[in-house]
Amino acid sequence: MIIISILITLSYLILIGRFIYGFNKVETFKFKNLPPKTRFSVIIPFRNEAENLPQLLKSIEHLNYHKLLFEVFLVDDESEDNSLEVIVKSGIDVITIPNKRETNSPKKDAINTAIGFAKNEWVITTDADCILPKFWLENFDNYIQNNNIDAVVAPVMYKSKNTFLNQFQNLDALSLQGATIGGFGLNKPFLCNGANFAYKKSVFNQIDGFKGNENIASGDDIFMLDKLLKVNKTIGYLKSKHAIVKTKAQTSWTSLISQHVRWAAKTSAYNNKFGKITGLIVLLMNALIIIGILLTILKLLNPFVLVSAVTIKAIVDFILLNKTASFFNKKNILKQYTLSFLPYSFFSVFVAIKAIFGGYTWKKREFKK
Image 1 (spheres, one colour):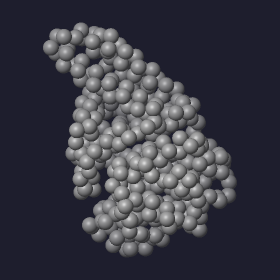
Image 2 (cartoon, one colour):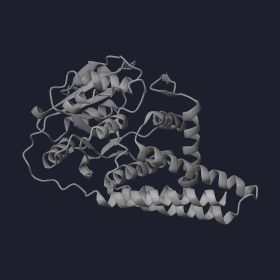
Image 3 (cartoon, one colour):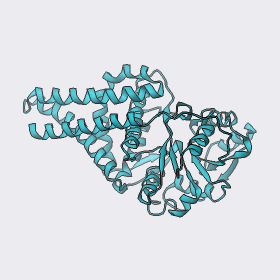
Image 4 (spheres, one colour):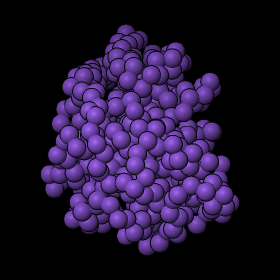
């Protein structure tokens, strides 16, 4: 057990150390004063989002970009509340269309549906519970004009509230964003978030969109990223504070678990080797801590082994989180790091087990693995 503990801890140390190095390599984007010219089709699937749509629509209205250079599609996925009424009453210039269901993945169907109507070359996806920053499209345009690229991944973060559940999710999001940026810095991108993801419509059609993974309910983002990488498309990371999309955190532990099980359920079909190795090492490290606690209590493991593993994990995690928190202006969240450290290990292992053996509920729909 001691040798296994050393191997897992060393692997984790090297992995997170590489992410820290990669994070530093991705330079913060420097905006240049260029006339806007990129035309965007913004695609936003929604289902029962009457509560969140007002903030989204307000942020769309305040976008600092020429109105003739972008269009917004809101794709209704069989909403059962008054979402459509909210959109109509807002008076904001958006195009609302019904989702055309063809597969087991409502969101992929929604994106496919909207792309069929999209007039512009660049597509950007986001979510209905998001708030878009004022200079969002302006930064995407500037980045695209300065780089010869086919797709752009950009930052996403939760809105903050002063509750343990919210700050737990913010710490989790910071770790995911740190790994995302670190992966790009290592030239091994493996994560992205569909709440802030742009790609060329022509490239989407060239790789047959989501064909091949359309029966997996989630994963519109990472499966697209993986397909783009396989055909050697150029993907950039827009590391700009003015491009950060804010999204709504889950309001209960039950919904948080369902969300993470939904994310984890797609990993068996994910073909990115670096991503799979990363996921395995992270899972093993969290499992090591849980098993180590049990074995130490039963006096079957030297406490020094457990303390060493926990200490190393805590230090390297904090370094990466600190860097990510600085970029997202979330350093106040780090106050909850100590309280969240051990619960996160139990949470992540529980989610992994549930994703393997069970399904999940999302937007009042049942999904099986």
